[in-house]
Image (cartoon, rainbow, N blue to C red):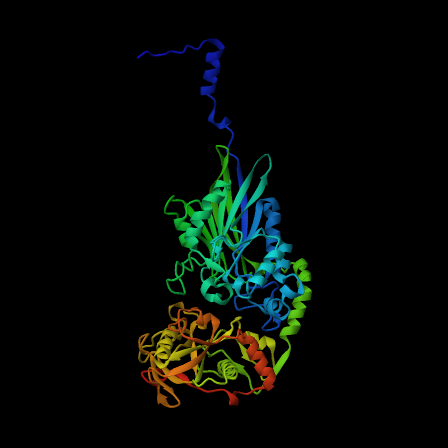
Length: 584
């Protein structure tokens, strides 16, 4: 083997020596840039800091405020601090449902007919959102209203895993890439992938069945993240309308409901996940991606515009490309600044219209009725819901021969019908969801199973232990809206017994109920479609489904009667016991 020698002499040797001995500090430092992403989620049509149910400015015991006008002030401040050209604003869903403001422009004066711009589109366009992801509640008012709102939005509305039922092709824009200029250098590209909740297939079955399917969040992200990276994204953020605990409120027939952390752990190439759906505040959480070992940032900005998540990404120029070298997040309380007067003025006409609507008197109540104790006592105000549901079904099915029962849950502990004038807002405060009424056929044995499932809501109470109502309910984090009460039969729930063995003395018209006896049970569409995972109802024969909104039925019944008097409908048909002795 021949060795080749290269001799350097004179100036050439001197220049090489100079190159070798160049001081390290003379090498130009790597260029860095910071990109700030702001995020909201679960706004639920809170545009202004207003409580339409109480007809006053919103406040709670923690001093929280709500609404996009508050968010806007905080966004303006951060844009001024960080530079508007280095900031982005995203939302993770549940935008167009939740307050009477949204209900009015969906049902009373629908934007699909009036041509009016939806108040949430007005506000979000004025604030300058860069992308918004579909939440499950976006589907509540049907696909035509959703399409109209999307058309009115200046920001792209994303939902990569909402696909056409037949073709499997995306029904909505899967992702968007935002380009941010960097002075004297190549721009930074931020890709955002939107993922919505598979539970839509259950919760809004009537609106989406045969039209849309909702695919697994992890599999959808595995499909689209490489596409976004391939198009040159330097930063990839997933906006997901899904909690982060990996659990589902429904059975295993659908993909996982709360899969945000799973997406971060199982899909390479994601820098951060801005998530929602659970209404929790998560300032900053890191999970390790299983494929790359890299840390993925997660944050959730609570609900209703009470918080704004701020994510900061440090990018460093490496081999001609921007690379994320640092990231952090926090949540900011929107109560620290006044409402943006521009947003307040913009929405004033629609806000005033809604205030006028919710203050219409529908009836007079013979006495004050409160829902404060509804989760653990049989209360007349919840009996009113049961009574109206039973009467509505009976009137719709005059030839029905089966006994009619009713199921309802305590949605709001703060709901009150005042003595005297009862207004739309009082009824809306009692029945806060946009559910429709159905009726299904169930047997005595199925009713027993159903009640046992519902009774899991209570914590087991030891013999002799003091009765603390604050610790009695919400076992296993079961929300109040998943504690169903049954009207038209009588029963006890023995909280000294273990879950599954609590329902005793189940009778109809004073006699024990035979296992095979059939009943017609009024129920809301959320529950019948599988929301909460209650047994039997999803497969039970449906004998009534006229798409009557329960809240509207309550309003119309009150208007027709003129008075709300518990003497005509209250019936204490269930109670809590301990070892057979009444708890209260």
